[in-house]
Length: 231
Image (cartoon, rainbow, N blue to C red; front, side, top):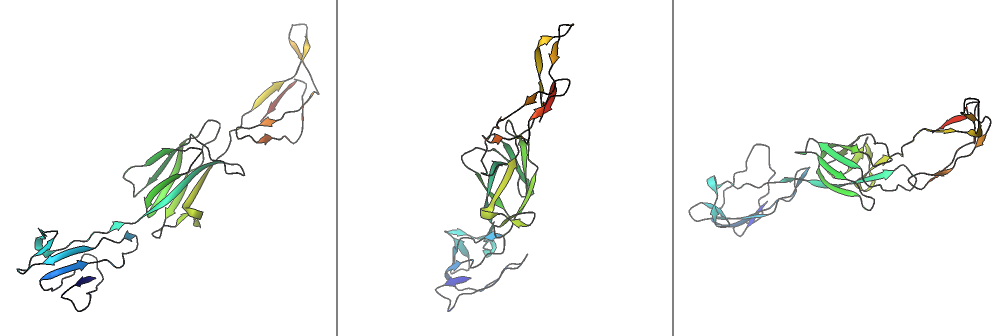
């Protein structure tokens, strides 16, 4: 809308694509205001302009070419939070993951490294993006890519599910390794080799890198070779 001393009432209009709005105004000072921005855009700041006695238009003392005032809207941006967590019940945040966000609205990918104290907050325009883990921290497997959408109203969704507090959780699982254990006697055979012990009961317990207790369903019984493989 346009307001001014020489107007009995504000002049209101709605912008159209590829079309300017022409108005006839008396000499005086006026203010152009955006009362509502289109979806996906932020409202522009007010523009105060002067129509001079000779019909020229000035803003801040500068003459405007062709009396054409340009009001520019910026595309709206929204805050998105990325949390890199372990696959435990506590959603423990983990450090050292090298992450990347790519999308058509980005001139170049956003890269950052996770830390265990705070989540990463990023400002993004409405659009579709992909969160990728370039490198997992030591002791963890890389997570699958996550494709997410930022709506024009700022809502963040993954697979059409709304993310609480615009927060995306990317989980890493602790790596698993195979370990071979061989039970032998303190005696040797005719060739001087250690004799394997069969039917020995082995019990294994411990904690993983997250401090979780590792529980095995049952003890392990050694075969004739005396060697077992534990995952």
